[in-house]
Picture 1 (cartoon, rainbow, N blue to C red):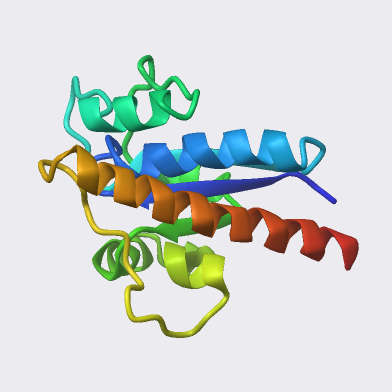
Picture 2: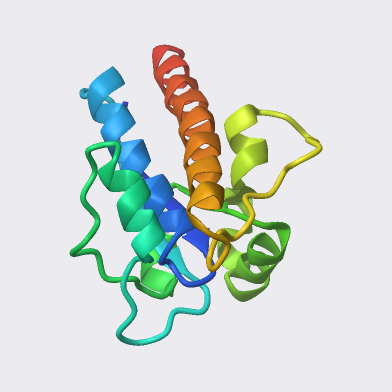
Length: 162
């Protein structure tokens, strides 16, 4: 199986997308370290000099993941071009990406729907936890972890069929 780059996208790249990238990398290494998948993350509205939110740092630290040195970055043509799959956390972000990167529309999806391999779900978006407290962050971490496990198993099965 050839190496695939998966890009997780949210708004500021300080919460959801960096959490997804970090959790994905840890799960992949624990479950299938030989799987040729490389996660990345970016945001559609990144401000200079931002860092991951304290709550994101805390939630991931509890899971043995350190994101304290991560620097949020903006989605660019180059990042999209280098990605095999682009997963946005909300419909609005997905629509933005498809509008601004027309040439990449076929590889841009909504995170939860792609991970779950469904066309519709009641809670199909990953809500922004920013400013909503540590318990909301913990809930988001749990949702991301469950969905990312499904995503990893999806790619493991897909690799068997190639």
